[in-house]
Amino acid sequence: MSAEQHQAPWGGIAFLAVLVVLLISGGIHTYNWMQDEQQAPVQVIDFSGQFEQLDVLKLERLIRQSQPGSFFALDVNDIHRLLEEQAWVYRASVRKQWPNRLKVYLVEQTPVARWNEDLMLNPYGESFNAEGKNLGLPRLFGPGGSEKTALEGFNAMQRLLRSRQLDIEELSLSERFAWQVQLVNGIEINLGRQEFIDRLQRFVDVYPLLSEQPKGVSYVDLRYDTGLAVGWQNETDTNQTKS
Image 1: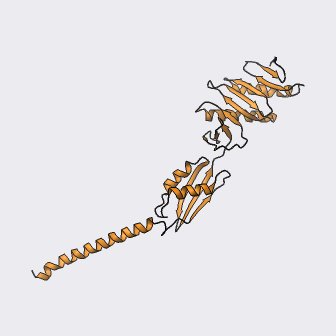
Image 2 (image 1 turned 120 degrees about the vertical axis):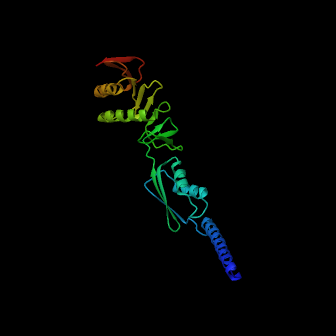
Image 3 (image 1 turned 180 degrees about the vertical axis):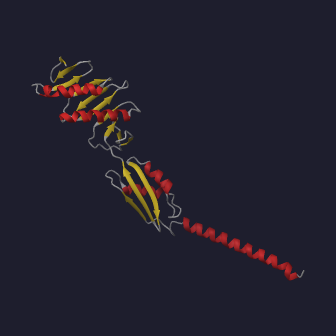
């Protein structure tokens, strides 16, 4: 075998080694370019959806602070988690749009009631941070973990009361799950623990008669099998009426 035949394989191996080095170097360069925000920045964060309480400028700052890299380095899963951790975000959808845009679709929380003063409830009985906002919503109180029970009770009572154009201002659910309600007109209703809807129906039935009395009603106690007790405004005594 000639010297040229011995050298040929080594020449091919050397060429292949150089090619591999060039490919690795090019890959590293490309990767660094893709990670460099100055080379491929996220120029636009496009928010869409219907919202009133959300501050999209604040959300954009959070996104840029958490993902300071380039368009290619940006992790949409991390941004998705970050957005859904924000108080007024119920759901978020995030995707990249070539070459430099981030598309964000937001579903805002829908508050239906305040919960224990510092939180709010959405229609599903899930609590979230109110961030100090007061939207004039009904106030609900109850032990931790009773959010859905309290909201379901509130909705059932409100449907019944609307037949008399009455609205609940405050509802309290005790540790023993006894119900107490204060109406917008100031009347307090004590329903106790059992059959609270049937007891409230009793109040709804007798309300027209009570509203015709010369003195205003202060409270109504319905913790009786067949009757109710009425406290009149500016009086310390209680009149009890049997149904």
